[in-house]
Length: 204
Image 1 (cartoon, rainbow, N blue to C red):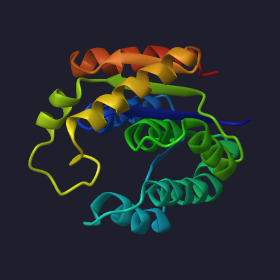
Image 2 (cartoon, rainbow, N blue to C red):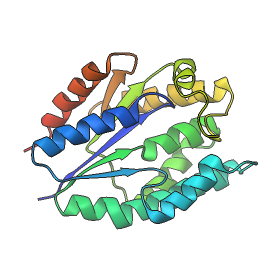
Image 3 (tube, rainbow, N blue to C red):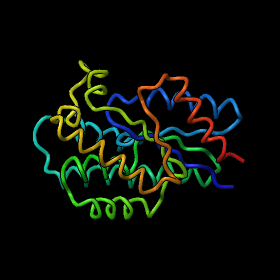
């Protein structure tokens, strides 16, 4: 039987890493085989691409950035995610194609449909069974992570991050059956319980 593909999305500082840990613990305790991944950086090749797209200082043209993310995504899905799902595992992933639509589409002001086509082509149309969006005011999120390693996207101006948040909410509104939108200012355990409740409905 095929497994599940669950992704977590949200702006910087929204708490995705924390909620992934809680979800993985919950699933593991229920006897499920769980594979964790992230974009960028879910594979050996992805680690190298992550250093380029997130930590390289200097300008990267928006279309080049989008292509680098798509390359990482194509390799991650082909070599890690799809094989795990086909083997019956549950894949829990930090970011996926919705990040590209929000960050490269809205943030970089690229054509959203072109960005979507690029990701769809790269992944052969694979969509998550569930996408959890941790919604947070960008100013709050950036305050949470102040002082960390240089990150090209985190360093963008406020207007960039506002566009990203608005794009995420629009994506969720357009696909309510796929998205679970949560207020990321709520307590950690409240968020974890909400995610568990939604995920439990997908388990058989």
